[in-house]
Image 1 (cartoon, rainbow, N blue to C red):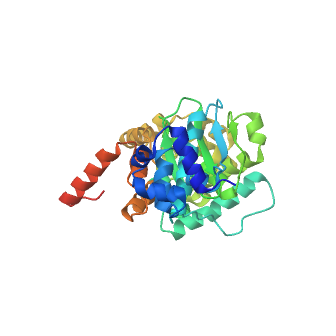
Image 2 (image 1 turned 90 degrees about the vertical axis):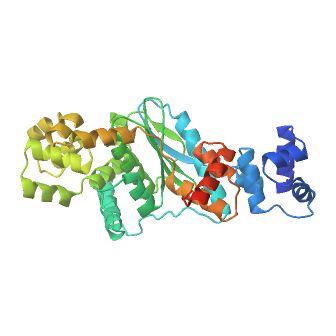
Length: 368
């Protein structure tokens, strides 16, 4: 059976580089690399991390000869998610490598028992209630701050946003080492937020599915899918808790203006809020129809929150690196367990430029 040394040697042969050039690209000493290849001294974890990063393979591949599997459940209206899946594979592979270096992902699924009987929608709502309890326990609020940061802090799942062609909303990527939610940048912040909650529902429900793409979340076939029913119910109950809605109506009554204000405060679309209220029997079908015709822009204008809506729209169009992955990649470098190359590659900048930036910040008292 091929050893790690055999796989590194094959990688060097495939690259067409001699030992010195291979070592230089991986930021290793040529003499140390030669000793490791000959079996005189074993490869260190840091050496393997450098080789994996420089030659675009995973540490799992160098250690075992196999790449870690990635289970993906993607929500998309066209099925065109190749770019996103490739990004998910890259991020989950990086997390596996960090786990080998001693930085496992801090995934914290809910452990309290949820409703195991009844409809899939009921299960989603039960799961949302347990998740909201965990959010409160960790002193967060679903209607305050950045939802991506909240999910990373409370549940330990990484959240990334990538530029993508039309027709893709988001996906969950799952391996033994990584839990990732990947979203598309969009000019519809409420839709992005609902997608984020939807994907969190998949992760917390343990939907470890093989690769598949959802063409239209609202299609009849999609609505019959049990895992999608559960994830949608979770997202609705998680973003629009029943006690929050009833408390708001009790305090202000229910008018177009108060409805618009509530939609803005919860950062959801008027349509989602109208259907949630109908489901909870807080409005009848006629009032639901009137409210759901309100656009997000109209709601912001009615609530006097136009500037806030514009800011959220700008933010939803910006790419976002997985926060926990970025944090741990930098920590591995600072601890001397990795070179700077993985962090520079993750940020998408030249390693020498990043090194100069860090050195400048250290001299001036800044923080990298």
